[in-house]
Length: 133
Image (cartoon, rainbow, N blue to C red; front, side):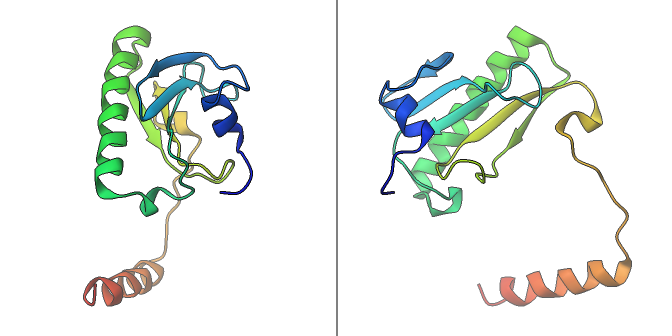
């Protein structure tokens, strides 16, 4: 990555954060624009844009950190569950969002009914790649 992202500036101490946890490879801090108050962002210190470009060991470590912090969140904030989103669209730096949730629509997702034909087409698209993967 050629220019520093906001996350890299936080890692480098150029911008403040509400730090929750840190080790030599990861940083976790409160999201200042959360879906729900208490949302934590977990970022690897090594800048990678897309989560599935991470090395397997790095990905596993990120998930272990996320699990640990979700347990902390459960004990401290007492939500019904902790949701996790990894979408990486706002900032081109892998980040896990841990969100305290108390009801089904807490994550802002809206379920929709999909036609059987659309499901079958999508299934075939995925299976055609899966069978050759």
